[in-house]
Length: 145
Image (cartoon, rainbow, N blue to C red; front, side, top):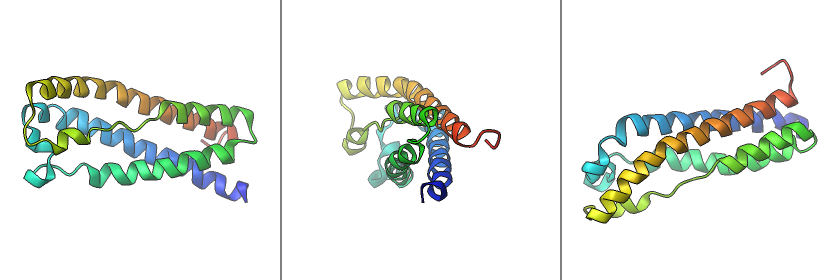
């Protein structure tokens, strides 16, 4: 059973991690440049983008797939190590508070700017997690990935 599930779990994790990276880059390059000055851009109730439509399915899929990936990699020490690295690096930040605020206070605006700056680093962590998953896949199937 594990052998049949392994490609689906690992490749699914890679796919959703790639989607996470693409979404992170889009938000950093497009959305994050504007919303700290206009919070309505990230408030769906006020005509802004509904980021939850993208992020909730991505994070749910990764939350389910990453432990399964670790399970199917467990028999190979190298793949297991890389899967553990990917899980250790990956985290889901919470930014819903900005979406809920009617207007940003000065303190929240400062916090929003810091959040946007840290988004760059979060994108690098997703790249690192993707690379770790890629290495796990290479350990499981040398020469095919």
